[in-house]
Amino acid sequence: METIHISEPELNCLELFRIALSENTNEERLRAINVMRHEVVSLGLENFPIKAGKNAPEFVHWVAETSIERQQAAHEFSEIAHRYNTRNERRLNIAEHVGKLVWDSIQWQEFKGLHVAGGILEQVRTIAKQEGIQGARDKDVLSRTWMTYRGVVHLGMAMDYCEDNPGKGLEVLDVAEKFRLGLSQGFPKQTRKPYMLEDEQFSFI
Image (cartoon, rainbow, N blue to C red; front, side):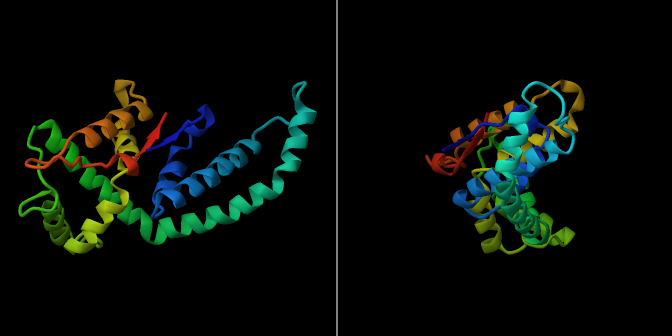
């Protein structure tokens, strides 16, 4: 499991980290998260009062020293964003929807299977066919999408849940951790293999 520490400024930019999670492998996601950290810094620099404060000279020096690294990260960010906008967003959305159905199945004590007849993936395929949703109508494609993203769907699930329940005073990362634990501890009936494998998971704290 990969543990990702999120700073206070980064809490305001969680959508960037969700974009990073849309990459195909955990190695690529870790690299993308590093890129997003640079993007958060760049966004903050636009509003930072450089002339203010006793540490301003040191800060200006740090900005100059790291400018090339930020420029390289900005280039990588544009490539990640392009992949997200053209393909990966749709795939991540589909996987997060599957994750929500898995969560509901756990809460209702149904513990539905994913790949069995009448299971969760078949349920998603039926809806996708009815609504013409690309990327979720073919069982093999849908299965690969879930397998690719199942270890990271909980962040987007939590962001959606908190957006839908603004009056509850919820913290996104706390909700994400609750989802992660539920998906990693629950498993379909007649199996002992959890919905989310430990070595695939990202934990955000």
